[in-house]
Image (cartoon, rainbow, N blue to C red; front, side, top):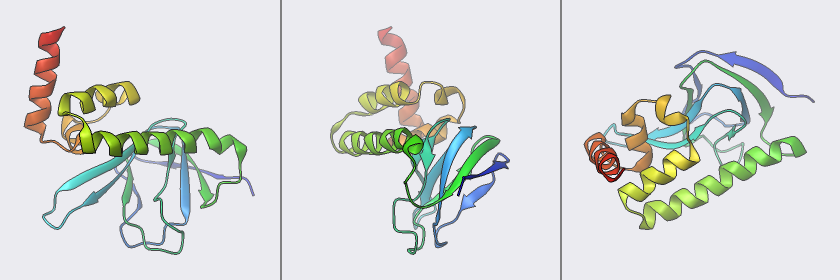
Length: 157
């Protein structure tokens, strides 16, 4: 069965925590993010998905979702049931897995400056597409710390 193509508006929530997560979103245009909110109400961004990337909760389809997925921009998405049997989706899946692995390693061992440089290299055009507070959340630092990192990098240039 071919994927269903949908359009979503900026701010639209595609998946909430606790819902069964049977969908995989292939981003044709626009930008998605996945995130969670901790017990204190703080948002933690897990992943961004720009064009040609895949967005899904990485747990079995019959398990309640752990992540919220929403649109940061108006988007066109191909929606498929949660299984990867299409060769054309392989590159998006490889992008997703490699970025996640690198991110986990960096969160464990890299400085804030190194994480920010990697973010810019991984998502070169997202820096201009999302608020700085979202980038800080993704990096695991405060917006103030991100401001200091950006200032330090600007001084080095």
